[in-house]
Length: 162
Image (cartoon, rainbow, N blue to C red):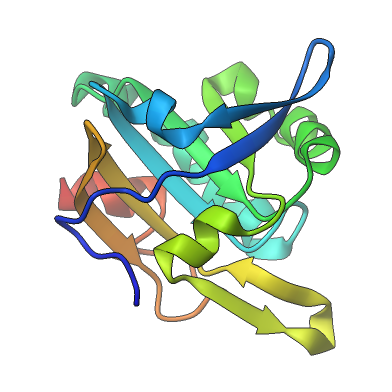
């Protein structure tokens, strides 16, 4: 069953590449007592993810801060090494976006938002969506009708809905 607006965010352990190599963080630690934006996408280096989704949050980061958002987090079903390389190529962390990997699709599955497209090598990936989470509760959730589109889940689309 898919998690919806008003639900408690499912907890998961996500990965990133720290100074000493791969490291983990509990999503509940990132959201407790904070207002965060989480946007999820099918994968690093994929077309719409690289040309539209990440850039939309880079462009709108300051507007989210003005609305009281403490952090913007990008979640992708990728390992921390790929996400680190993608982060560097997009400039996401330099712009203030936190890149976290859902390497085993634990979070994506708990959200009820997995899809597979075997012809293009995407297996158990995330649908494209964005949400506002306040102290662990999803207060706004915007999901695209298909993962090849980035309208309502982009930075501008989420800001318009807030």
